[in-house]
Amino acid sequence: MADADTTEAKNYATSVPMQNVPFFLKGSNNLDWGMKNRLSQIFDPTSGRTVMLAFDHGYFLGPTSGLERIDLNIVPLIEYADTLMLTRGILRTTIPPTYTRGIVLRASGGPSILKELSDEEIAVSIDEAVRLNVAAMAVQVFIGGEHETRSVHNMTRLVDMGNRHGIATLAVTAVGKEMVRDAQYMRLATRMCAELGATYVKTYYVDEDFDTVTASCPVPIVIAGGKKLPEPEALQLAYNAVQQGAAGVDMGRNIFQSEAPAAMIQAVRAVVHENLSPTDAYDLYLALKESDKQSVEN
Image 1 (cartoon, rainbow, N blue to C red):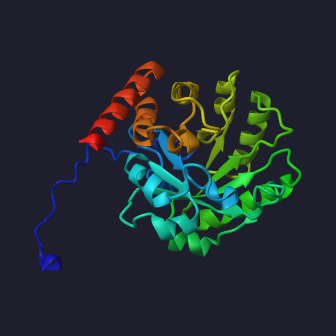
Image 2: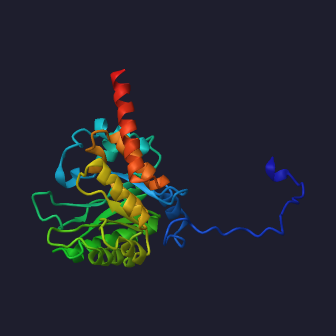
Image 3: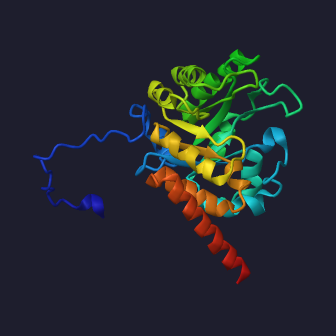
């Protein structure tokens, strides 16, 4: 038996101090081990970045274009994603439980596209998040919206619940139709979320001074893909964002509405994790698209 082994231990390496290695992710060094472990399921520890595949749109849009059949349109893509952003209904019914990377669970909701979207509430309990073994919970925050205070309090309640269980909170900054999408607004929205405890923040890229948005936010920022763009423009968007300090992208429509979704997500990965130029990434997309086409024909 091991406890009966009385051989004297000798290799203490007394001249080698124990290393205290900083955690790789911005603003996360003082988090608990469990939280850091979950964040490592979202962000690649080698690049420090993430490609999140977002397909939670159905929680207010229903079966929008490209998401009519999650099992056919999305499940074949999950092997290329660092993490998935989705609802608990889709997670339970459609995503294979053998998927071992991070799950970011949509935790707020309520109104449909037919109503005032800023009127959301927390829609998932912390017990449910723990039961589903998620890495993070995502909550919409409407800075400047009609229900701004409620949405901020939704976020802070999730932060408190998540911190108790080592689950990260992703604050998603929503921009209403009346809001100006500029760096000044993004600095305000992202900084508020970080100051009130969000583990990381999802926001929109802006063409001017986006580096001031990432610099002034003490936690990682991932950028939303937004509406469907031509593939070269979407790759340029991803490149500009990570080169100006974003810790990755959370793309949905620019991947699953692409003519070749598998090729597109791999091209986005090359931009985010390998700093591939948009031109080279588009060439990669075209090559993968042609390869996939030939595989189907054969």
